Length: 608
Image 1 (cartoon, rainbow, N blue to C red):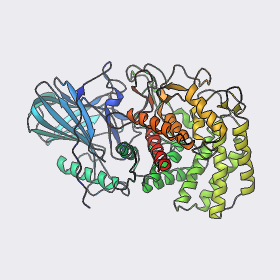
Image 2: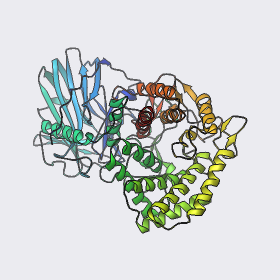
Image 3: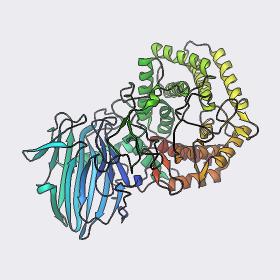
Image 4: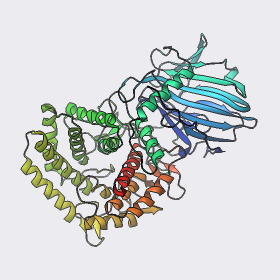
């Protein structure tokens, strides 16, 4: 298949910036291959690399400790300014760096096998990070180094540098260079000179060798062949397509799992303790993600993630909040005392304690996934339906019981309105599955309880004094997750109490310029010290509510402002610092990109 040529990227150069030795998160680009991911800075260094899998102990994690975390370096001596851009519709990243005497271009990507079809091939990844360097003008002095966390033993082997890291799952690495590297990895490139580097990990690090040029060509072809399926022609089309590619880079090709983010412990406030490991797959992300995937033509990704979710449920019976890439329980959460944290923001955490929490929304998330699966033509086997039917029954029993909620508070449980509403979703979707697929189930009872839950959400959660729905049944607190109720078809967006709640959230949880806090910890204790930034997904939910209420001009203006907050590469973080606009939290964040795609689709449909 021929792949159309697209304009070459032309990064806009800006002065290099570091904060206490750390790059701003918005100055990092993501590369990945469906198994592993890396973040490349404008300065040319790889600041984060987890291999051979997203959830492996990182090979380098300089983002979490600039001195001890390790980096894959490509330092341009005297670098003054730089810029980054993606090759359109690909995961191939271009970084231009200007030094005192010339400029170099660095092209980074994780190589894909020749002829790989990303919508079909589970084994598309080669397990290689490729770095192609070309002097565009003048001359530049470079230093190349691979510095795994904890160090490595290194020895030359027939023109290849073999490294054996002292920690982590990669027992052997190989670095292949197209020209001899000088002492300490130093060399000089003049105009037109080039250097190709291929870093390979895992068993058999001396695998089949292909030229860096061939690897780039086949990787670009694979990405663009896949991107032909993206179906969107509305406003901010470039950002929607970039969001789709970003989500695909967070997709575990082997089984369809989607990690929440490729990173761990990037802080929700600089210096604060709200730092979590997001390199796992959350059930709630599944329902939102497959909805977004399906609506822009990515049916394979939608079905893959749904299949992974339902397999995990069938295997374990009891629903879990999140899983590792294999659909198993993640490792226990632990703090790493050896790393200082991004910009001095400890603790660094590996694993995620939320895996052991009670979160009743998962019943609705799983049944909604099953319903979407069935709507796409998927079958529900008898053994799987037995598990799912048990979850519907459980939702009918627990919806008034306390849990830790969608935001995973670390206090004793409360009766969150959103959790109860998602139990209503479980009952509604369970009834729909029985009615459309002829499955056994007590539809009449489920619909009766679903209506009881819906009335409780509308009436018992109503806080007359505040003039809005409350965070809890019985009143108390305000939570931006209430904006998701119309998206899950619990309450229409134009219901008077939903309209009032939208106004209350926009007013009381405002962080400025269309940004929203999830909740206010002083009013809604979460058991944690410190504060956090504005949560981007909540603002996209606000866009959807405004659109659903017919306030299309307001919705479009807000959506435009949120798109303007994307980084130069079109990437979005978990949170934004309201005071500075800087990125916070794990990056890039799948939920934020799902929100952008969903809001774009909603606005296009309502404006048609």
